[in-house]
Image 1 (tube, rainbow, N blue to C red):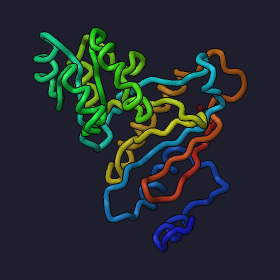
Image 2 (cartoon, helix red, strand yellow):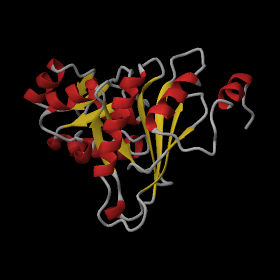
Image 3 (cartoon, rainbow, N blue to C red):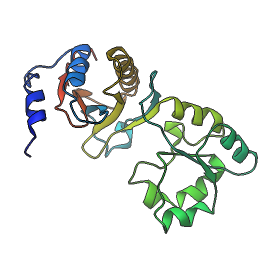
Amino acid sequence: MKHGKKYVEAAKQIDRAVAYEPTEAISLVKKTAVAKFDETVEVHIRTGCDGRHAEQQVRGAVVLPNGTGKTVKVLVFAKGDKVNEAEAAGADYVGGDELIPKIQNDGWLDFDVVVATPDMMGVVGRLGKVLGPKGLMPNPKAGTVTMDVTKAINDIKAGKIEYRLDKSNIIHVPIGKASFEEEKLQENFDALMEAIVKAKPSALKGQYLRSITVTSTMGPGVKVSVAKF
């Protein structure tokens, strides 16, 4: 892959052989985010887990203290009083059965997170093939299958993010924008790492966190020392 001039110049500021302390890594990511738009800062964590085994799955959610810098659209599947509750809490879309054809047939996916009350999971289950591959399926572990829709919506709007292993056993998570102050990115990074360390599967033998890389959307990756974790 050929990189542009800006990327090459930015990459010169980073020593690929060094695993930096988190504060230094975040500072470098901010310096090397030189795109014309406000880049997202992402953390990529390579784990020693084998996600094919259920007991080695890592999945959960964490509220980042400073949010992600992104406006998140929330779709809630609910019925009865919960519809009014979801609307009052600021859900962008609320509905039930009538949304199924819209998503299945019309390909409507103008939302970032899906919340469902437990009694609606039968309906939502029919969308598994559409929502599953996009990581949008509500899940009790992530707090998106719940009767407390107000709390779920408030948390998501405040900067709650989900983390899970991908097929290569890597976790990819946004922790803010390049325009954030370093301290705010650091606080978000710390909150994320604390949650991921706690989520270590008890069945795992060997090293849990193999490598951590922080990067901006268009910038080069910066390795973070895993020693303290």
